[in-house]
Image 1: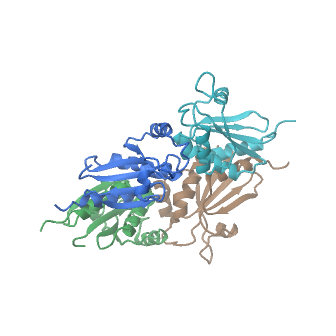
Image 2: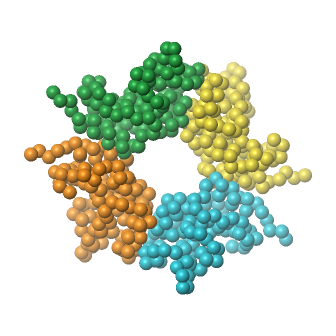
Image 3: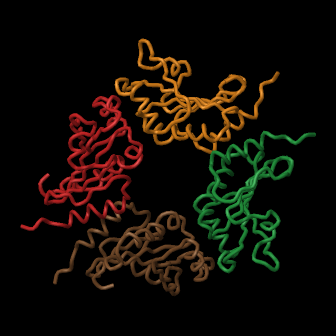
Length: 133
Length: 133
Length: 133
Length: 133
């Protein structure tokens, strides 16, 4: 992912705000931007209803919602319910969008619904920022 | 349910057309009509991804989507994947809406997205039809 | 119109709530119900910006928005700005929906956005009510 | 406007695609971006129904739709119906969006509905391009 802008979409398959807005938005981002410039990555950060949101269920979800961007499963927390990456980024819930710049640093992190126009602008701003040599 | 109009909403928790349209519509029907006149009943008719759409997962789904109308689980088919009631009504998929008149007969059955205005009209027409004595 | 249910849609062509919701809804009603049962009638009730909402402008509006239900122009008020029918019905603004039953009496009158499902139900209820002989 | 990115929104007050999508989008752009960076300018390019879309009617429209970005009226064509700026830019109809870069050159011109996310990205790309000294 070196030199690319990364958009991380943290979600849960049973989170209404993700299913109705955030996850389809991530799919559109994936289709709109060139993968050489922007990498959209999903992260299934299950922090509740663990028995329901299993890897098998996630696979069915990805299939039914025709998601084509790569999706990873966050490592379960030990001992708490919050998974590891979600803790590391101190996310407040799902959906969370994280934009990581070409220099590998977090350019933006937001919890909740993101406006299409604003998100497009933020990603383009990150694309325009080149790391100093 | 005798003498009442029944609206049956057959759905699957991982069916995008149900989650984005049919199921919230059933919830609004349940809140808009008087329960003495119209009974809205959900039916979880799982015919695919059985390992994902378990009763535990359905319970989490109901909780997350704040559904307040009663929801039954259709009996698994034996031996096929199509559950029993879904077979009995010869449903083509999910979501399916069934309107049952005051006389206990099917007044309407439709597969796919239902227009709000048309559905409201169909239910009111069923309400206006009293069984002959 | 005798014996039919009449839906009166009072609007102004420069009223945002009419253009985005009420007027297209009236057009859908007109197309969904049988004209033998339900007559949808528009009424241009201009009570502000009279110099802008002229008959010529209304004609252009009807053409651009492809409206096919009949639309009348409310008679200007004398001396005030409120037109005659709007005054007679004591409408509070636009859009206003009026449902007139088969017996010629007002069954419902509402100001503002009408929910599709609720409006469909109200019209069907009016259809189901036959005047006593 | 020197050094700023300019977004030109050409519209007609009786064009449904403008009223339902393009014009409110221009208003959101105007509110979302800093005026020091991006100037949103409306242009009323009347090429039909001239008797309906008069300056008086436009003023009522601007008032009713609470538009806060500056709006100019395109000079009537002579002799044809197409106004002067619309001709100069060879616009195909309304709405048309034109993005003018910091260097004063047209960076993008599009006819019809613009996707929020794509438009946000295009404007940010124009912002990121500085004229060579």
